[in-house]
Image (tube, rainbow, N blue to C red):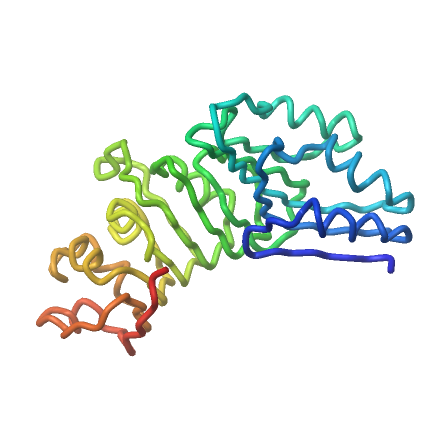
Length: 283
């Protein structure tokens, strides 16, 4: 086998026990693509040194390596130090990788958790999973699906960066129950997502519903699919009377909610393109 791609859409607990041994056996591999989200316990973030010593050193014919690796540290016990962005970036440079994106959200294990993303540039995957609030930017114009997950709030300025650096984004999933700290409603910076047609806010705080549905903050000219808790939607739209959220709801066709409901008096006027309601299970 000369080419191999391994893409995981969920957290993996078996990187050391299954993934690494599998890759080591592919001695004739010339091209490798890895997109993984790895949960680790008593180890540190996956960096350039670890990738080389555990995998790449065993692949003598490899000449093309594309990767996006998210490490989620879960430790028990006291807080410990983790490598910084510079430490991780230097570990790749030392191994010959000059163009690498690094985003270490936590340089200490706090509350038994730590997160880090490392990815090759140019970024060629179609999705970017488990983005945290530490993302500082970088052109990722191949990405069509973005999932954001963090214990810290996502602020308006981060979504402004994303709208520029993910210009062809089509689907956005926000998993964050923390309220925004900065006042978004008085921001003079209007954000536009020109290709976004699906927005998943099922597990998002009401602040993110206001952030995206209010046309004072965000323009979503092609939004047709919305996934959201019904009560959150009713709150953000003021029971479907709020003019500020009316425009971004105008083209929504299927509405995915967590519970059945009787459509209020203003509902059909608020969603003139509405087709049907679909129930989704919240897990």
